[in-house]
Length: 295
Ligand code: NAD
Image (cartoon, rainbow, N blue to C red):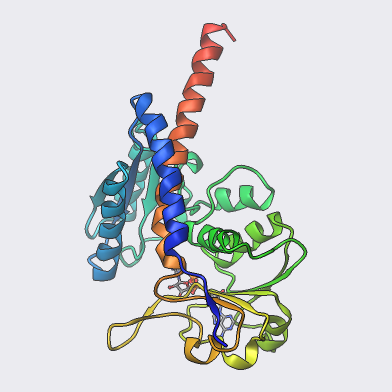
């Protein structure tokens, strides 16, 4: 037996269709959704990733402007974020890491207006998410949910083990799972006996940043495994956090790397941009109405 493969492409295609519908509605109001991507590194992988966002945006009639700041100081990056916050033509802001040495990313993400925080980087977004208020979740965390929902993997009342507790993936994902009534266990680098948690989980999401961490003795024939990890091997191949060769023949379903979570992430960043533009339009209308009603 081999696992059912939970491919990202059909999920991404569905997201792109949602984007298309919203872009058409916004065009009727003369609004072009626009995302700003701030880059301050020469890192080749980052440049490639940002290029892929720009190409995907162009195909979906979403404007994308890359602000390549080079070896910028923290102050200059902060000023750029503030300028973009104030720019009504920009609906989404992404601060791409890595940043130059000595620049404190946690101080900078706090400056991103939550209404434009389309990758859920500001701690305010995570806070709102955790109390069930409107906020953009980090696109990677939401990708996991979109994949599970697309393939009709039940979450309500199910036990889900999330391996990884970062603010980018593990923690926001746990909140999204709780919102769907899953019983969530967050495992991390100090967790004792990982297999005890992963083997009793219906769904196991691996976001540990450790190549080939999840092994065959940590899964069962009923496990649904989502691999969030991305690593480039010495031979230049992309691989994940799951020992896919030994795990895939054993489990019920597996999202592959490449071709799984990462495939959906960019589409979700653009969906969030378009949703932010839609929210902006609704806010402007409300304000206009309040002004005309003299409130
Ligand atoms: P991170 O390094 O910030 O966090 C890793 C987490 O895993 C930590 O909470 C740590 O406690 C836990 N961990 C580490 N070793 C462990 C072990 N042996 N057992 C149990 N837990 C362990 O990483 P991150 O930013 O959350 O990213 C995680 C992975 O997801 C990375 O491989 C990253 O490249 C990938 N990622 C993929 C996408 C995508 O779109 N596909 C986006 C973001 C991150």
